[in-house]
Image (cartoon, rainbow, N blue to C red; front, side):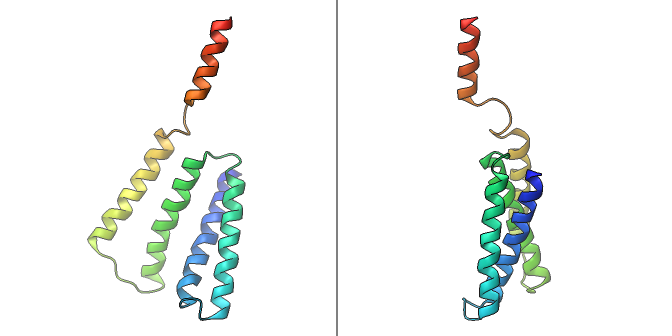
Length: 124
């Protein structure tokens, strides 16, 4: 469920970012209002997902997927150009998110948990 909330947050962020572009510097009212509402929604659902998902993993997924998908939207919808450096950068973001989710601090015991477990073992 937490990952579904995180996906809703990412989708809201994508809408907010696209509408930010469409607002032309907050000079167009409707896209500006949609952008603000979408970002509020995005942070709300991100905060809900943080009840279960560790902050470092959630933020890496949120920002990483958001960045990658924003680039794809900018190319497909806004007809912006992309170059080899951008593609390499996107690939590195994806690799970083995968590594953080597979091996990051959210996986395994924290140092505080390890200390508590050691204290319990010593008492026994």
